Image (cartoon, rainbow, N blue to C red; front, side, top):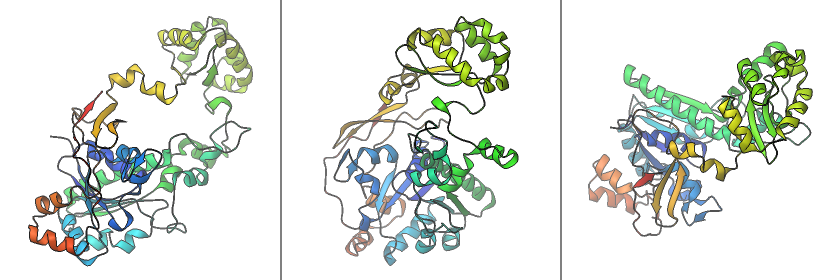
Length: 413
């Protein structure tokens, strides 16, 4: 049995942050049931270009494997009744909507506790349910600017920059998943559910970590560093070799001593300018020039062989293709493959969350409303007469165009 096989999550989620959080739960066996608004055409992630065809997109596949989908208008009185039946049979209601929307949709704990006193209502929004920005939409780019991240990313003489991946979105999803699991644990222990009010803003601010602590207590002013250098550990940055770039880092003094031996410059360890982290930080520019001169004499591959043999933390600066082709990627079975009726074989990166024995079988992301009847009859016990009455009331919206029945089994590379 999968670790979360006894947890059911009703997800009113869309796009990236919310689905990224719940896909880890689904990969661990949780029954994640996506409620997709038929009036909006379902999760907007279904239509994200450039790799999209109708209601299928590779973006959507990335964040929604192993989930089920039901098309349902929860604003419709009969749709609301179905929603509340789902809540009765669930552990959590999970959403990533604007901070004021859970109140409008009546999906907070106070709205649902009479339906299920143990329900955990987990809301991930841009700015949370409180504060002057609670009713504003929040996106990764916006939060990276607001929380100071863009002043820390890129070269000092360049424009403000975001991180490559949408780290606020993805970190927010992970924070929400952790909060949901903690809430379910407490609800099972105490018999009482709760609200979990998460936000991308809180996540972005929390991830300032020691930089915020240094500023709050010592007046430190963080800024961008050349070549992505660490603000205090020297050397710890990217360097240019004969044919490209590599990262090397001395997070401990022992690595500095290993590095100078591997570079055949052992005298640098005894140089008073470079004796300690503090000394090397003062003389960082001088040290960088010296290391640049040494590293320019050999290729990246040659240096990596020497540095790895010396147990110095190092890596090439890979592009995405090279990263996916790394032998460590294959050894950790980080890529899964699924048959898809539109895209043929879809390969994607699996969840890094591992608990016990790895999951061996995954399933492609669901079509919009694909599991509506299965959920209504199998989970909620509705008979066909009730299902047809709800369909006639347009509670489920129009069904998406039919496509060939796909294979759902997924293998791991």
